[in-house]
Amino acid sequence: MKPTKKSKKPLLITVLILAVILVAFLLNPLRFFKGLLIPVSVFSQVTGQKLQSTDGRTNILVLGLDRREGENSGRTDTILIGSVGLTTGDAALISVPRDLWIPTLAVKINAAYVYGGAASVRGTLEKILGLPIHYFAVVDFSTFEKAVDIIGGITVNVENPFTDKYYPIDGREDDTCGLEALPEATESSEFSFPCRFEKVQFAKGEQKMDGKTALKFVRSRHSVGDEGTDFARSARQQKIIEALGNKILSWEVLANPLRAESLFSTFKTGLETNIGFFEAEKFYALGNKVDLSLVRTVVLDEDNVLYNPPMGPVYGGAWVLIPRGGDFSGVADFVEKFVFSEPTAPSPSSKL
Image 1: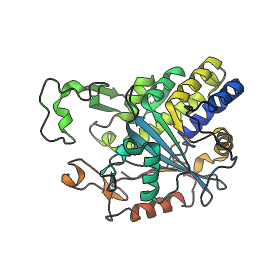
Image 2: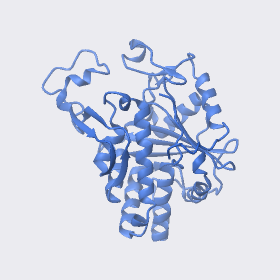
Image 3: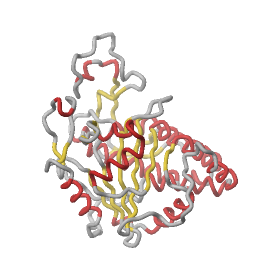
Image 4: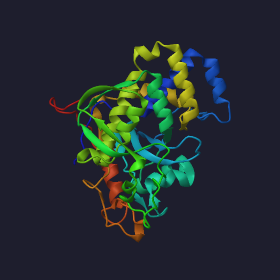
């Protein structure tokens, strides 16, 4: 499946985060600044008022963290890098597959967070993609789910219906269903324990989703056909993020102080980022400057720079993706050309 251009994806989660920060500040600036002074605050303190950038672009890493309640760490189920031109007004979004194998860590990229948090993921991606990452934001799934419920759910247009018979039931991922585990763990061995899973279905058309439903929509990865691919998951994630951002920025939410306060409290405890207040102000202005018709997206996958090698001991018996050329130089070249490519407006027939 080839990468496609999409037009309404401005800064994605970043816009959502900044909207919550700014609304919270306007509602109660004293409380906001007091929160910044708390050592465990998720918002970093900053002194500068200019956005960090390289060659005229600011790059932001967004991670969706699969972290169970009570855990301090987890795996990153969603990995997105947004690159914004400070003068051109264009934005590029790169989706990195969770199955990308990292030789230096001997794990998939989705496990890098376990080894050193956001700094580990950030540093690893900078090395293999050759792209400096200036800012990051980590949102766990519990925070995502709560945020959707706080704003009263979101409306999503499901373009491609699908059924996933193997969606993991939270809290039962390690349940052996009374059976002995298989001697070798493989990508499909988990299906031998049906009590771990539930069937989820999504019909075609516009529908209202609460937090749990929206999370299932973006995380599903075992449906038959194209919707079971990482590319489809990335497209669904972008669709949900856009719907969430639009709802938060809607008058229905902005005019409701209780919802705004609740959102702020939720993100304060469930968001990890190095975006401070002064940067937030600059990001907000930059977001208004971005030309929506120039936003483009791509997924690093088998259609461009990666391929799936045979499973074996080198990769721990797992299904992985590795660079076609044997190292990441080709991947870095592809990313550089994509990020710095000349933005082109979509044709009149392009879908928004």
